[in-house]
Image (tube, rainbow, N blue to C red; front, top):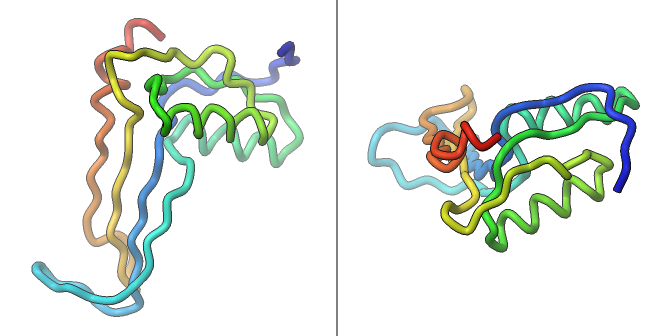
Length: 123
């Protein structure tokens, strides 16, 4: 697909897995709440905001050649984000970010972005 490019967004394209509860959380707690998985990563988030401003962003990042990567790639295309220059590989899986949030915000988070770190020179 051919796109006019207004901006290049370089960095993470991954799945955000967010667990939220309205109750305060302490270490070891098991509380009710809800969990959602949404496209994320700094580069993706910037590209999505540029789309909202009616600009044409291009992503430079990494996705694994796995079902999670395929789903993110398709999501980008459906949103009008140029994902043609995302580096893909069978050697690494698509990255993820997991956060636990309570009524006050993020309690803890883990960014599993080892794939992007490993292939950074390829991008």
